[in-house]
Length: 219
Image 1 (tube, rainbow, N blue to C red):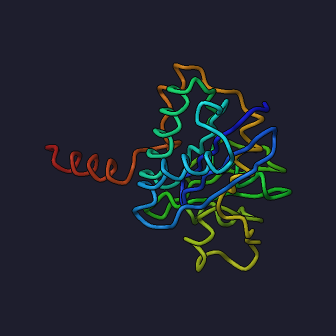
Image 2 (spheres, rainbow, N blue to C red; image 1 turned 60 degrees about the horizontal axis):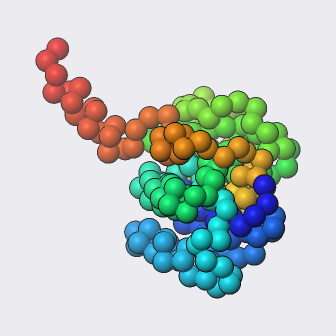
């Protein structure tokens, strides 16, 4: 798909990009910290304007859907849905691990912290998923890994054994999100409205609330 794209990735450090005619022409990383989500839409507006465009000129919106920061993803996905719906753009959802793997040749396991000694993990070969995203015990997974990338490389840096090759690609680039987005179909209106961050379970707050509820039930 050609046209004018807005690209949003907020699974970790929030990133914004604009692509025109199949080429990413502008990108910006928002400053790290809790305030970055407040600056997302102002940054989008400025980046579009700096490219000599207007929001009405957008034809597609691509958004990273995680796994990653639950709050960041909700902000990014909500912004993407709002813009796509109000402007009549197509919306393309991009799994964050697929975007990371798109920058790593060969076979790689992309991992992220799923808390409580578990990881989100998905294996790719030359950017093609070998299995669906899943949650595994870090101990069970680590003996099967060869090359690893993703945000979990930093989280588990002191636990990764020497035989595992650590890729330098630990976060998705705007360019990779765009490449993956162009190969995926746009969402229908119904799919757009239902779109949520890609998780196999609730946020940590939801998990704690569920655990507290369970513990309070009579045995």
